[in-house]
Amino acid sequence: MVARWWAVVVLVAIPSLGAGGETPEAPPESWTQQWFFRFLVNAAGYASFMLPGYLLVRYFRRKNYLETGRGLCFPLVKVCVFGNEPKASDEVPLAPRTEPAETTPTWQALKLLFCAVGLQVSYLTWGVLQERVMTRSYGATATWAGERFTDSQFLVLMNRVLAFIVAGLYCLFCKQPRHGAPMYQYSFASLSNVLSSWCQYEALKFVSFPTQVLAKASKVIPVMLMGKLVSRRSYEHWEYLTAGLISIGVSMFLLSSGPEPRSSQATTLSGVILLGGYIAFDSFTSNWQDALFAYKMSSVQMMLGVNFFSCLFTVGSLLEQGALLEGTRFMGRHSEFAAHALLLSVCSACGQLFIFYTIGQFGAAVFTIIMTLRQAFAILLSCLLYGHTITVVGGLGVAVVFAALLLRVYARGRLKQRGKKAVPIESPVQDK
Image 1 (tube, rainbow, N blue to C red):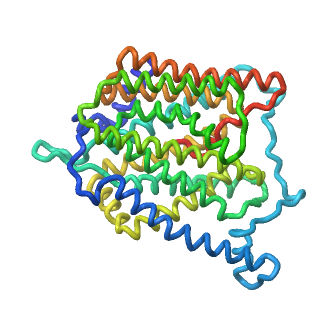
Image 2: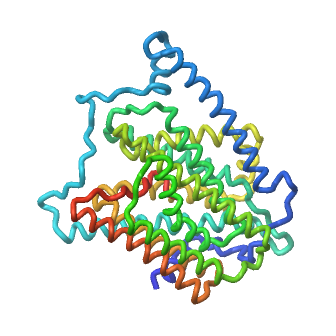
Image 3: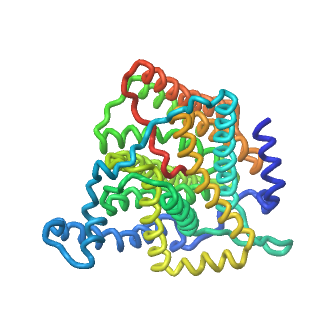
């Protein structure tokens, strides 16, 4: 009922979402337009920034520039390469959640409803628009099929620019802890975050949105693997159990679902590879961000630093390819696309603020439950709007996945009640 109501609202608010509602059909592409070639070109563009930056960092550290450097560039080099040691007097403690004594249960319930509705509206709209932008044509008429937007990197840039502006304004008007991390440390999380977002957008050209959502739900498995490799974490038996249940549920869904009308073995393999790339890059991002939080920064500072480098990488790569102007021209030709892309970015940035507020007010467990339900609603909404079909066995697989995710939340809560240290929930600084 909730999904049907939301579908009606979305279609009324943005009537063109269902337009061009033909079954997505991948047009023939030259080899230079194939996803793996574009991935390599994008990676080369990012490397043109990363490698010189890495060499400069190595040079300044080898020369012990922090002790011997001076001049106008010294403060910039210090912030970018060495960071600042936070002073006790400069610390702004990241206080735990505190509930005012005068807060009533009714007021708490209203705040929880506000957070839940804000998260659902932001990310359900974001998901619907993402599928619309990547799988449907723009400008279609009775005599012309229209044209599709194909540059995923341009969408990543729009999202990151708006997120950077929002995070910058928040840091400007709200007092933050003294920043201590070397700026270059953000570049690693930023690079993997850009690549994961690119893979996510590209995958929609080859697999259905419900498949993508389930892939996101199953990323807890590679997150655990990355945690072992990057952070040397150990995990409880129940975590391995729930990871196994998620794998079973995803397998049930994928093996029972019939092929999409546009699919072939080649496109299905491409979609699987891209989803695997998304999960791997996103798992690295979350673990690297967890390590950066050792500098006692706030989540908004993390958001600002990561998105700064994301803007730098994507703008540079698009300029090197000459694609920035083409993406702008596409927006000029299709005002509908411009509106969708802008709303997509607004929903992503607003969703981040709702994430921080929800976790600050109610904790990570409540936030995880809300976002798990959001994923389930997103699958239902996509099926209603875009005609995806799910078999009974596939539906059971979806139920197994979300039951396992809720079981993880319950187990974490029990560990917290017993005073044991639960494994931290994945950093939600850039939810996609």
